Amino acid sequence: MAKVSVVMPIYNADRYLEKAITALVKQTYKDTDIILVDDGSTDRSPAIIERMMNKCEHIKMCSQPHSGIARARNLGLKLSNSEYVTFVDADDWVEPDFVEKHLKVLETGYTSRFMRTIDCSVASGFYITVAGKEEKIKKLSPEKLLLFKSPAVWLRLLRTDFLRKNNLEFGDYALAEDLNFTGKIHLLTNPNFVLTEKPLYHYHIRPGSAVGISDERQFQIFDAVRDLENFAKENDCYEQNENFLEYMVINHVLMAGMKRAGEGKLLNQAIDKIIQFVDELHPQWYENKFIEMYTDEEEKKYLEAVRRMDRKAIMKFASHY
Image (cartoon, rainbow, N blue to C red; front, side):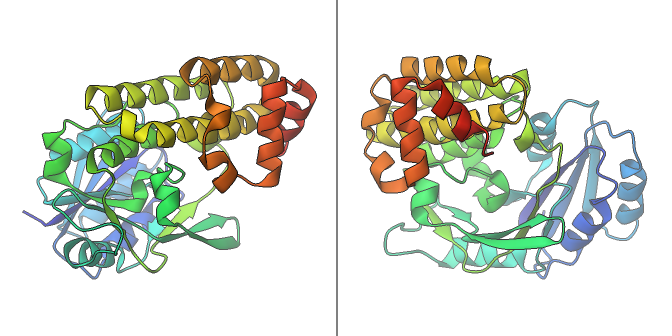
């Protein structure tokens, strides 16, 4: 039994797959299983997986009919019998010490603010975005993680027994499955995490990825957010996290969701649907204390435009996606 499992969901990723898998095979920490979940690919991905399996005994493969990234991750998580688990997307790649550094800070490290416990998780303090030939290092502060601003599951190394003890798995949403999943982890751990101190993950930004969804599926974020807030209430952790959850809705639905809608042809419809959803869930959202602390001037002007229902100003903000 390996100490760490890396789960990679794969769907028609043959352009990127060999690079992604090779980066996992070359990890400096060798006690690692690589679980590749083929989500019904119709390109050369299965052949690439088979070829890579012949080169590395630590690779395990399973397949399912095309069902989406959430179900693929859940299947990989189910098959993992390691102490820790992390996730890597098939079009991204990681540094050779990705697993080693995450494991080291999780088992030995703590910060003065976030003490290490058995339910502690680790998050990358930095990652690298890749768009064409342009690369940028992104730094994550503890505040961004506390405020659910960086919910990507590929930033985290998690204790497998903690996930299973709390029956945590990915919800089947076209959008915000990471927000729903990591949000629940944060709620249950109060949150408790440590950060790595170097960029270890290369996040490939490409057209057609899930974050670019601008059709009707974008409204599935409503279900993901409702489920997360209901989870907090069911686990008696809503009251102490209400401000964080409310700001999550402001950030991911009211701001990012509106910009996402601006990329497609649903903006007029989205303005009404998004604002109605936020007003119903958090009627006093505009009084959230984190707005003043963590939004820039453009965002503040936009939020004021939402309060005035100034459609022209709202559409101008959305067009800058």
